[in-house]
Image (cartoon, rainbow, N blue to C red; front, side, top):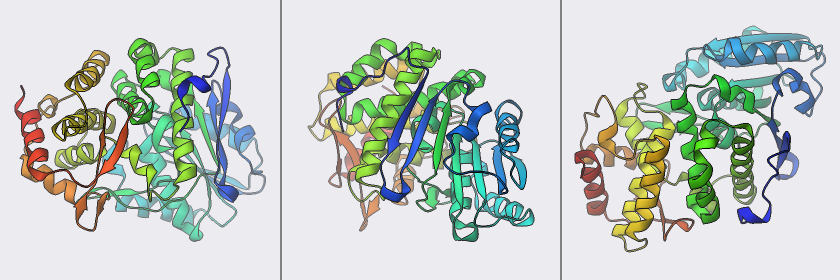
Length: 385
């Protein structure tokens, strides 16, 4: 991955494009303002005479999906259908997948159809999975309307749904044909959703770019405001970093696992919360990144000051940093959380894989973490200092 200082975007630019290089499956990420009304300009296939489907959730359908629907209709498709599902992580389920596929089949889906996913990570993951499976695969366009989806889940082709045993355990890799990030959609988000997305931005600095993390320490409040210049810069840098990793390791056989920094802990917390809304994904990742840094310290890899910088920055932004900050409190134990981790996708040959760091910007994977250390870290975060 390249250093941030080598290619910093100009804050004055009102539109940027990031290329995901995957051979025949390559596509562009379009970042800018007022993109939804002209969305067909960012779709690399003609929609004329095609059956088009727009999947969204009930929170997004009026402000954003309606714009996409009208813009797509202007492309003279054979038909356009819109379906709005209930918002929230519980929608990313097998029942919802069946509902979406049945909806498309009932309305004449064929191999030339295009599915637009307009919403956050839940809609993007669910739509991608449906697009990958119906008719053995159709084109789909990611239209992420949350900060988290714009910098993470909409990019890279991961699709999937949750199961009672854990998060994202069923799914496939299916790349979109385009990603359209209209930062105007961020203006309609609750601040809590903005902060949840910001956690994933911080992740990119912690993985391999200490200069980006340092920039976020200075500009993070403006990113979360969100002010267009800083927000667009943070989104572009995050997308470029993910693009480089995905191009090098599309199916997560190696370095792409670095993108899971904080996620092994975070997914366990989400599972323990039952996806009931008390803990957003980005909030779980924020706590998970702190726990990952503490695990790194216990393994003798990073200094206490590195943990302090991460905790202080996340707390200053307004993100949780400890398990005991979750409300209502989780009714679980460190041992039960460890059980969720053992069901995580990042378990290989019975061994849990954690992303740890030798310091800020120096992340790597390990399967040598001691269970006793993990349990102690969890207990400390649940009990408080």
